[in-house]
Length: 246
Image (tube, rainbow, N blue to C red; front, side, top):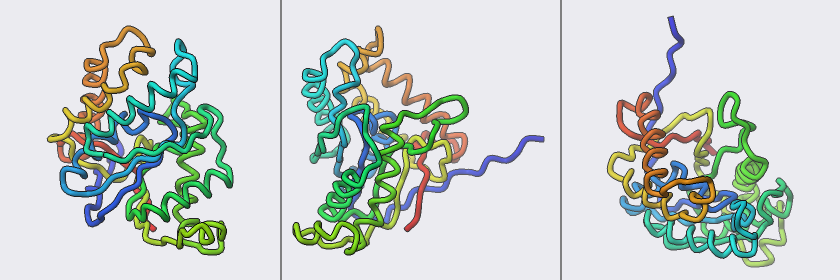
């Protein structure tokens, strides 16, 4: 007899704004973009905040060239799923620390955008058994979790108030994409093609991984991910999230 694996719950939809905060260009495209496309199609506002420009992500391309290429690819990728605003903090790729400076920068962004939903990438040590996560993902994800509280507390980073950013305690949920402990999901049956096109926009990055056609690579990967999640979401192709309530 096997243990029952709990079904995934639908993600909440009674929100207006989402701020998606990740470490690198392409982090959101490995799954979450399908949900983002569904949200923007339904009238929700989604903004992207990238901590780095991913300059260390292409082995055969110098960082000063890669950061320009990857920023352009990220902006094109975001536009495919209905996201017009993409910001970059400019931290150094590969060596992000869960620092007070990062928490302050994220708290500032949260106060400015005033999202009800925060979205980030897996902050856990692994993606699952035997699959170690990178330090950048861990640091940014954990800093996002901390910054949700920082943004609402006027006595943490009081200099932000002096800059004109009043406390915002309106974050209601933090959704973690790619988590090995998912609790919720979004049906991407109508947006999977957009998600595939969004990931395929990262052409230089995907081609740097090997002899891949970007569209075929994105289609194979994202269709497999969505089908795997469907087993816990009523048979519907889906993207999963670990959801924290606040």
